[in-house]
View: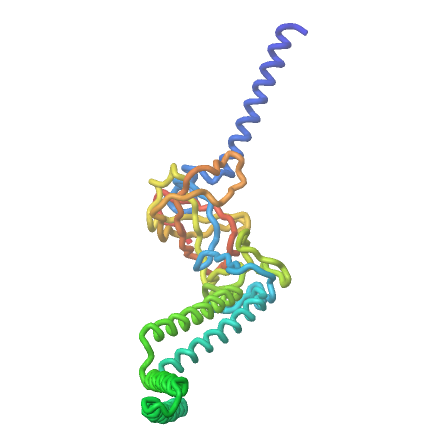
Length: 353
């Protein structure tokens, strides 16, 4: 092979490589959401830049899980079902907690009854019995006193022994002690409860009622309820599955599907090119070439992390983005929630119908 032939072959190979690189570059520019300066269908308007977006409902999609660990006892809703806020979606089995609640409620009732008896004081029958016991103790005391005085007089005249006299003195002491105890019991039954006793009874009631509330709250967490008015988009839950709050997962997906809007993720390099009211054109493979018109309704005040994947290998996922909400002008076509779209932000002019 001559030198000339080698030069011809080498030049042809280099030319072929250049053509391949140029072709790949043009293809990437066509498919990339970062295209700039491309004429749009709007009269007198060009695409300043493009960003990936996703179709959302009137509210963001809400992922609903459970607040308690356990086995999924039941699922009460189906996909595409409209639910009101507070609707029971599913339930975690909590039979053991029901038993704990019954025990706590019984203890609370007992504590309340004890406090009621303390505040009410003794019953009339108890007070009457105490009065009768006091009267009997006083009569016994008077009898013992008379016997002791008689035995003392006899002892002084040496008509009875010292032991007999001393026994009479002891009997009087016992009768006096019994009388004082009866009087004290009568006074206690008639007196109001002590402040420390009332405080102790109140504390016992509060503690018992607190245990009831704790059990009720734990049981309430077994119920999975809808946090919004919306449509059930997806039911991930299956009866009999286990759920753990340590490694939580969504059981239901809900959203308000009464309307649609687009949430676009604007690259940090294009933040200064977007403004509220700016016209946009929305494209997607699912639209079969049809373009939808819209405008920027609001722009986030804070940068965030990228969450929409474009599928382009050259697209960097570690860039910060700014979220913008796009209102659609054509509301006749209900786009599926979650659909990925490309949002072309126009530099001037307004899109035509």
